Length: 461
Image 1 (tube, rainbow, N blue to C red):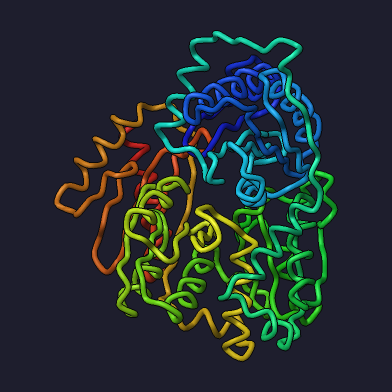
Image 2: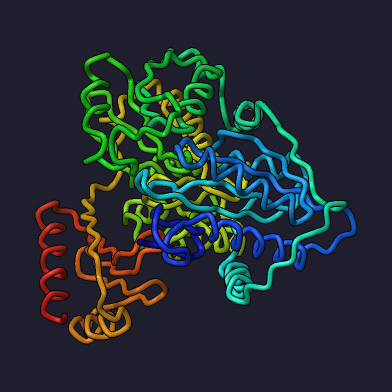
């Protein structure tokens, strides 16, 4: 039984005691706390309006009914947009001039999980301080619902994904004509969630020939939903089989995107933001923001072009905060998350796809296997371990062991080694694990660093 509350939202496993898993009682308490936060944040006399969407998980369908009922009993008008993507909820909040929004999703977590992602009136995730306020309200457990005369209403809105797609295509930087002339053929893995609807819709509107796999949004995740190499073996085989130009895979709520090369090789989730930043910086030089766990390749690219580069703790809210501070023109994470502020301050796989295709088309449809050779070659090894030891004591002992090295403590501990090698150890925002990332110009050395730090942790514990 797991329930995780962080600046990345609320998510947990299904079944078990409330407060220790993602349960109907937790949904009611969290929705009340969220509306209390909304009312304190945006004081107004008329009814508040909240956008509500869900991913393709089986449980999201009936949880949205419970959430809708909870919200209207708090006097809220609900704009229900149905099956959706997380970025579509953000865009819909802006379009509808709503006071906030909730997305029912556990993002990349397995199908026995679910969760809530909560937005402010700008269509952006709540800040860390906002979540602290919200969780304090939950802990007080003083819930007051409205009388029957003040109960809210539910309004259904259709075609919100289409409106999202139209907004992306209308961006000045997206060249629909050159994409259409390139006559791309692309295999899409929609993981049987919202991406199975949204990604093909975007591509077809850009004149792309689409080969669909797992695009029925029935919540039956055929493989593990996180879009990383080991989970995408099938699409890597299908791209060369169908002689496609590339493959595209997204996570269940479509805020992360990865690409497959024409020869079936994995382009790499770290290189999604690298290649898109390359395209953006060709049009305009400006600050770039990513996370401490993201590849050195993005920093190399930025410095080569002469663009300021900034790193933040892992998590969309941290990247967005820094992007606003430095007026960044592009940002994201090494997990396939792309944030293009000219659309919205939030990760968005769909705008990432449109930017990437414009980039490839303007390079005369360069094969992805060739494009990747243009960027610095690094190898990241990623591990996660279940960990019950005191995290502060662990980091303190790791710090002592590696004293003499440059370190960063903004998010766990990042240890900088020679030759652009590094180790990053941090507690996950989305799972009950400790994440360990290492990077080197050698795959063998990157794996060695992971094994070494795991051995160090084993000795410490």
